[in-house]
Length: 323
Image 1 (cartoon, rainbow, N blue to C red):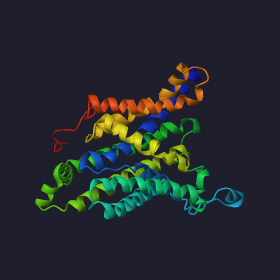
Image 2: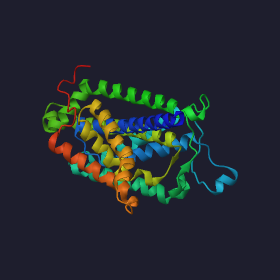
Image 3: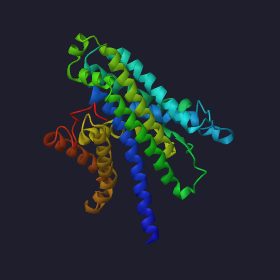
Image 4: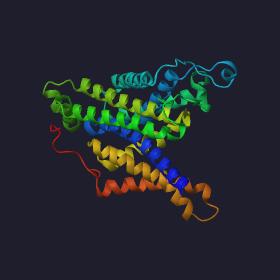
């Protein structure tokens, strides 16, 4: 009974860590889409940039016999927080370049650009083995503060670390959105021509929003890398890195950070727990196809929410000036 209870607790802690990481990514998307109306379909690209940047900054470069099997262009062996900072900066810089090229165009161009950049990043990492070991990826990534607790209890500590990042990011975004800066973003989403006529630099505000949201996504990617301790390009495909995050935000409520967090936990619960249930009900001989049923479940949930509650579970807050 003790082992069974311990296994359940470990599963729940791992679930909470991943759901919290996705909540960070969903908040980043909320800055883009929920508050500014920027159509970002390339979340997976910033997710990957954050993960690989932090991995390369914090892990040592392979030496000796390991250098024959693991190719890694950079291995700075720097502290965890510097890896997080590097992930945010690199994601922000790439977002800035994308924004400068596309934000003066119509919304569709940003969507196309972000999709293309996300896939280009994944394919580049996958094909250029010299950078981060190609399709084999990086393993043995350092875990912060791993020496202060026994290995079997480390996930409890990492849940605290991720929760701190989620809390800080939540309050930082809430503070920003409820400030004059945030009210300009919401006005741009509603009618950017009117905002421009009021003397605001619409392009500059949209660029700030794109960079800020991308930096949050980069932090989420870095936290994922250090939790999994191993990353591969295949992890950052559009389904796992973009579509599921849109489902989380849509379910919880666009323009509501609490909704983004709640939606992340609900969708990740459906994603991670449905496989166990599906294996119990599928006919014998269909076990290999069972994991794909959850793709359908996520899609049906998204369609149901769009039809029944287009504003999500919580919906957008009416008064954003109050904090």
